[in-house]
Every structure is written in structure tokens, then in C-alpha cells.
Image 1: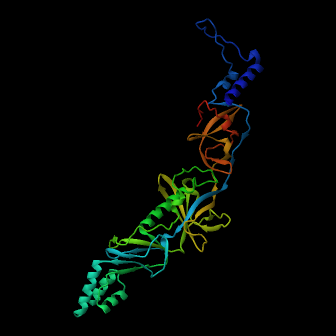
Image 2: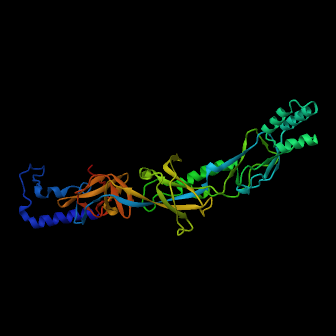
Image 3: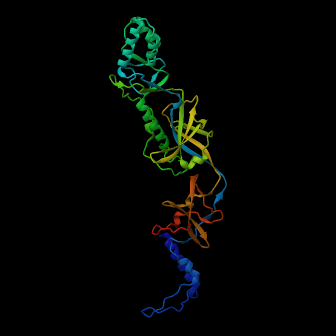
Length: 400
């Protein structure tokens, strides 16, 4: 390899210039054939070490820079519904769904809109008891009315039963808020997919920084809301207290972003962040981080941040890209080419006299063709191109 050639040429030049005085034959024990071995002169002994220990070359050197640096980290995210403004529609009685008016997820609904009708034997029995009490004095009528209200009947419905004297076998269930309705089982799956995609849809989480977070096979598309048919069907039974649907307020949205663990110490609550939809990078919006949450999921350790959107033009399910300034006040900075990455080890070649010696260093983030080095290298002269000095035929023995 080229490094081996450099060593051989340098040795040849040294012998040619020094002449016969540079290499003196010293007394040495005779071999079995009667010959004497020539001893290498001490002036060139340091040049004969293997190339995985040191390299003789004439490369330009660089010195590390120090001081604080402001780096713009870029991450991806997704717009979701604000879970603080979600409403659950539950069945207060056990029974059979006789009529279902919700056909697909994310169907828009309004407060007071009829959602479904349920037949419940328990509710029918309670109505008969109330009618019996009403026909026989009515002393316990108030208690019977209260029982029906606790079972989910509206006061107007109870009055209608008392007026007509007939039992209502189909009890209507109404929506309790405006927004978009989502089946409960689909809502749980959507929350999980949104969290996973926010963590992994950003790739390394530092696309502009060359960060080192591990990739993941989960795709962001899983978090996008879709109008899929509901799994609930007419004739299906529900239990008392079972949450059937969730209603999300369309006016309350949240932008969630995932940052790699390496940035956890640099992100603060209240810090300003700029973001835009992936399809429209020019329409930037600014907000401040409202929540920081450490998350470990699917073998990934990351940090999820949440921004509550107010009067935003964004819609649920849109993919986002964001940038946030991060200040690094520690470490030294070298050009990226000056550091060689050998598996789990980072190496720089420090110049000592006329040779380059590999030294293992601890590195940090990478940004703008510069890499952070946390090992002290303040007064070192370092080869500008570490990859040029790596011999592919030997393993580098770095000094620590």
C-alpha cells in the first residue's frame, strides 16, 4: 500500500544520503553458515517500525480550534391531535349495538350528533321498574329516575317513557364534543405509530449534523391519519363502561419532534424552534418547546419534544422538518478528514518529528465539515487527511 511505499522510499533516501558511514557493521555472532548480521544504525532505527505503529509521510498538518460553536440541528416530526382535548364516548350499559352511524375513522362529528343506538336488557328492566313505581304511588319515582340517568338515559328520554308508558328498547348515544371521531382501538394504534414515527422518521435526527443515532425500519407513513372503516359492527355487544370512540378536537394540534440522545443536554423547555411542512419549506412557523420527554422504544433511546400549535395552518398527519440552534461550549474541533473511524474507535495521526503516530480520541457531533473531539489535542499537529495514512493491510495500533 501507499504508506508502505512511503516508508521504503524514505529508508532508501536515508541510506543513499548517509553513505557507508550511516550503516556500520558491528561485531555480531556468526551464524551457522559463518556470516555476520549487519546491525541497523540507531539514526534510522526509528524509521523501521511497522506502518500500523507509525507512518513516515509529508502531509500538511492542522491544529484544532477551540471555543463555543452554534450548530443548527435538523430533525423531522409529525402533526398530531392534542391528547389534552380528547373526549371518550363510553357505553354506560352492556348491550347490543342495534344501529351504528359512524362508518369510518376521522369522520367529522358535532356535539349532540347521534352516534349509535344500543339495546340493553338491564336498561329495559329499569324502565319497567320506573313505570311500575309511577303507577303505584310514585314514592320511589325520584330514585328510579336517577337510576336511569346513571345508566345513560337523558332526562328528556325518561320523561317520554313516563308520558307514553312504553319502554324504549333502543337507547341513543350522542356525541359529546365537536371534532373528528376515531375508534378506540384505532386511536391506541395511532398513538403508538405516531410516537414511533416521530422517533424514527427523522433518520439520524441530525441530517445536517452527521449525527450518530441508530436508524430504524419504522416508517413515518404509519402516523398519518387515514379514513379507514371502523371495525365496530351492528349486532356487536359492548360492555358497561367500555370506551367505544374517541373524539379529537380539530382546533387543538400538537407538533412532535424526536431528537437523538446526544442532543438531550442541549435542548431546553421554552427554547425556540422553527419548523415547516415537508412539502412547503418556505412557509416557516416558529414556536417554543412546551414539553420534553425521554423515550425508549424499539431499542432506541431518544428524546421527544412537543410543541402546542395555536392558530396554525398545519393539519393533523402532516410531516414536518424543524431546525433548532444548539450551542456547544466544550471540546476541540477538527476537519472531518483529520479523523479516521476504525470500527468503534476514532483515530487521529499526531505528528512527532518526521513521523505520524496514531492516537485514539473521543469524538462528539459532526457539523459543517467539522467534528468535535472531547480529548485534549490543543497543541497537537495532526495530519489533515487521516484516511490517507491508514494501511488497509494492517490494523492500526493507536496510543491512548
